Image (tube, rainbow, N blue to C red; front, side):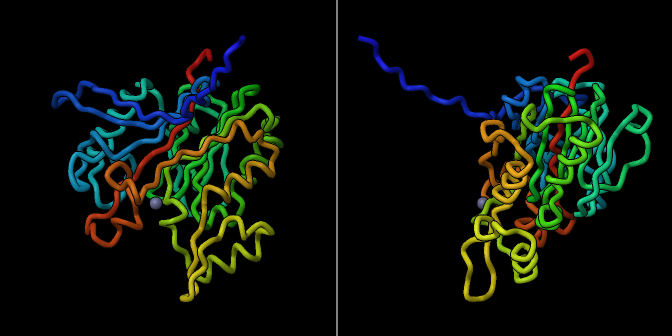
Amino acid sequence: MQELVEETAEPAFVMRDREIDTAHGKARLTTLVCEPLEHAGFVNAFSTRLGGVSALPSDSLSLAHFKGDQKENVAENRRRFLKAIGTEGARIVTARQTHSNERCTIESPAQAIGPQPECDAMITGLPDVLIAIQTADCLPVLIGDTKTGTMAAIHAGWRGTAGRITERTIADMMLLHGVNTRDCFAALGPTACVDCYEVGQDVIDRYKSEFGYWRQVLVNFKENGKAHLDIRAANVQQLRFCGFDEDRIYVADYCTMHQNELFFSYRKEGKGQPSGVGRSLSVIGKRSGS
Ligand SMILES: [Zn+2]
């Protein structure tokens, strides 16, 4: 008689520890990787705050410039990050993010080293370029299309999500780059979870007027007029609406506020940190020839 073997699903996200050499000795970095996206040919990583040189409060891996940190620290942190994820020499492209729903396409190597574009989602098909979203609580969404090799990195906070930034980015991928969502993978990274993400009346009103499914993304209404926003569910809805295969949407179960020892959190640290809050990077790219 044949025995039934229970299948255990592999976790889609893995925390990877890497020890790397630096000018000041060894450093240990931890990054979160979506393996199915990686197996589909896309280098991807969601940074943690471990293993850097920024005093936020100490040894922090803050990967984006802001007034509370020195440029040299961010440069050293980025060097370490690239080494840890095995993409030394790749170009990190960040945008000037403004919580909008604007997208831009990085079309040429010249554009990749040019001035920062102002947008909240980037699309590219270029190899050896890592398009990177900066967050400290907002949701980073990475998308890779296996057919055309087109990639996207999206900054989805409450404003961008209300402006349907994920849907708009996918529409650009389809219209401008010939992408079919059936061939795509999506990875949703660490963010403030629904239990931590309290929102006020302005956000509630905006979501109620924008989304027929608002009851699935706004929960736990309180007498003081506040509620909780499930930013992951809201973006999963947008991916579904665009025809994403349910099996190819991966949602990381890490909360920037619950796991503040691993991730920067603006909501958690913003008030107590006079120098400001560090920034994580979520990156996607592909190597030349792949
Ligand atoms: Zn949480």
